Image 1 (cartoon, rainbow, N blue to C red):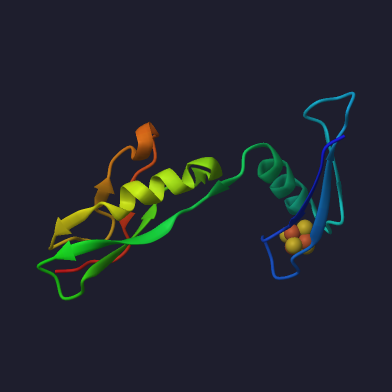
Image 2 (cartoon, protein in one colour; image 1 turned 90 degrees about the horizontal axis):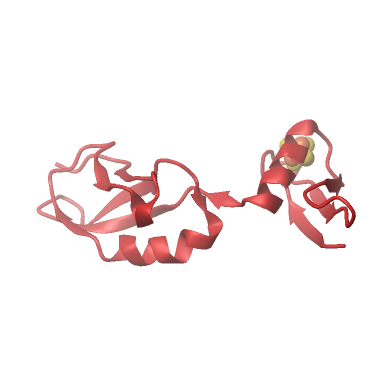
Length: 121
Ligand code: SF4
């Protein structure tokens, strides 16, 4: 029986949860320690397919600041985060850039884009 401990990050209560997969029913989970239904959904997603919205910065030239803040427009599978950061860290671009502009289209072959989160003219 696989057991995983996690903290729900959906609200400030931060419930500590214990997620256990039923040995005779793969994919069926028992979740203890939460205080609402939203937490159960979070536990299922975090256990089966954890994802993260990635935020970072990239180098920008010809702009009032040296780095442009960016983020993924959708949550990325957690297992791709380090590869994604390697790709983002190689980006250098020239201003101007407007908020929402796509900086990397189809990150790592996914349908996820990296977009600018502020304008730098
Ligand atoms: S389980 Fe519910 S109450 Fe607990 S942290 Fe998550 S959202 Fe908040």
